[in-house]
Structures are given as C-alpha cells and as structure tokens.
Length: 166
Image 1 (cartoon, rainbow, N blue to C red):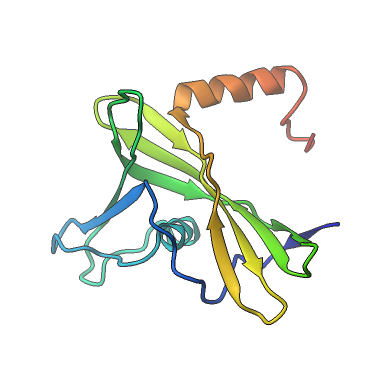
Image 2: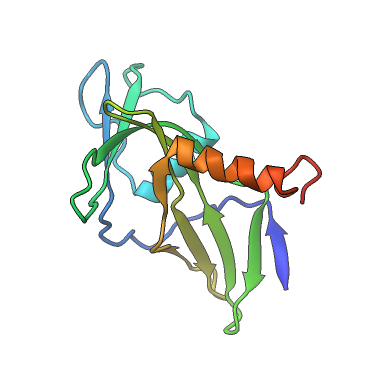
C-alpha cells in the first residue's frame, strides 16, 4: 500500500557508495570546495535552498561529471536547478522496512549546448530499528532539455500530465 510522506528523508544515512557521477562544488569567491557531502545530500540541499551561499558568502558553482560511455562528449555540466516531489511516496517493504522513493529533476547547463535534464533517484530504506540507508537508482536518464520538453508536450497533447492531475 502506497503512502505519501512529507518527511524529505531526514536523519543520518549510511555512506553513499562510489558513484560514476562525480559532484564538483566550488565557491566563486574563495575557490575552495564549498560542500563536502554526498551527491544525494547536495541535490537535496539545492532543491530545498537554491540560493544558499558558501560560508564566505560567495556563490557556489556545482558541476557534475558523468561517466558516459559509447563515445559521448560533454561529460561535465553545471547545475542550474534541482527539484523533488512534495510529498514523497512511501510504502512498507515485505520485511517491514519503510521505503521512500526520492526522485530528483536536475536542470543542467551543458558547455556549448542547451540545457539538459538529469533524473536521478534514490530509495531511502528505513528499517524497523530506525536506521536509514540510501540506495541509488541505477537508471537515471540524462538528455537534452529539448528532448524532455518534446516528450512532455506529446504526453500533454495526448491528454496526460495536465493541470487536472492525470
């Protein structure tokens, strides 16, 4: 049975596993790394407070380096915005753990190209003893924003994803 959660994954988590996508955070003023955190925590922080500054007051630049294969270029992109649903969707696993689905919509600026969309997701698994573990979703699409917009437009023209909530 699905339940909605208003709790955006509070609490401590096990360490994030080595990820192919690397997060590079720099400050425009002091040029030092402004955040030393997991990718999940960094995306959550940006989504919840997009105007947050470095401790020195400078503006953060957050870049993501993707480990694309098949000869893909433009592997580094700067984050422009991050969003996550409110409320989140949760359910009980067969072992009694609470599982919360935590997707993100990340708008990226690609060097020499238009914006791109990346949609990573995690599952936050909270065991009955209260311990939380984040599990990264393995299939996060990354595409030019024009492709994403095209699919949204097609879905809306077909009567889906409209303001009526369908």
